[in-house]
Amino acid sequence: MKIDLTDTTAGDINKALVRGRRAIGTPAVGMVLTLVIVTDEENAYDALKAANDASREHPSRTLVVIKRFSRNPRARTSSRLDAEVRVGADAGTGETVVLRLYGEVVDHADSVVLPLLLPDAPVVVWWPVEAPEAPAKDPLGALAQRRVTDTYAAEEPVRELSARAAAYTPGDTDLSWTRITPWRSMLAAALDQVTCEVEGVVVEGEEFNPSCELLAMWLADRLDVPVKRSVSAGPGLTAVRMDTSCGPIVLDRADGSLATLSIKGQPARAVALNRRDTAELIAEELRRLDPDDTYASALRYGVERLDTVPGQGTPEPGQPASRAAEPAEPDAEPAPVEEAAKAPAKKAAAKTAKKAPARKAAAK
Image (cartoon, rainbow, N blue to C red; front, side, top):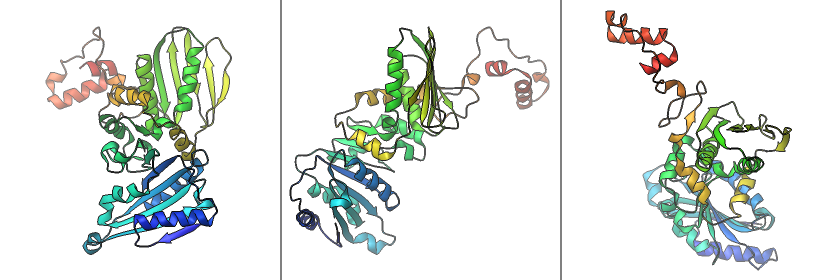
């Protein structure tokens, strides 16, 4: 059942919800939380579909906040709130209210949402795209116990991770972190089967996929070993290779669905490691509303502390260059300088760099 309201108020929306529940014969409210989705028209359909699918596991009142920015000064000075109330089969197992804000009310979305929150129930705010730099300081984020973002949707995902770390507040989380839950479980189970010490790790995946960086930071933070970030064609995460004192442990997923776990001295095993859709990710995040300390620790480890494998793409700004650009060992021979003295400084440097091996060029 759908009820359209034009130029309405929060009070009228609450009355429409009561009428809708009575009309479908379910006057009781059996929802466990309020999920607030802050998005735009372009992404509203996909976000709402994912929320409706997740509501089968977590019955909730879903409030979709769509800010419609006006194109002319006159429209920006006026305020209007349109709403679409959905109950019954049109709203999964809960209730849905799509709020479209116009004019000055765009800057006061929290005052619209606050009267519509379920009483004495947790609040989760989800930004599918364009999350604020500090979610906890956002007016809507301040209403929530849990704040969900997705750095994968950001224009510069790796830079976004650094911003998330700087503004982290207990209760913040990210779907890029949720995506690697099966990987973390599988790697932890693999390490439980051996008594070896991990000496180094390589994480391989798409270049602009923040889940790869988060997994690498988690491994570096937990194991206290050097972790390198290698770039592959994808899809998503493709492999994790751990060098141990007993031999390599490799979790390889080349096709995005079926992975192979190889441990030295044991037969290789095929494990299901499917790429999950957004509904599954949101359902997982709604299972826990307490702060995720493991995510916080991995996030604060810092992207800039990860290394990159030579020849595997250009590091993001702020990251260290690959080992080919590191200072050479002390026993490296210095490059000859007699010929360089005969030419201008720039030509000599270029000529020496071309002739000298990579290590000698790096040393110079």
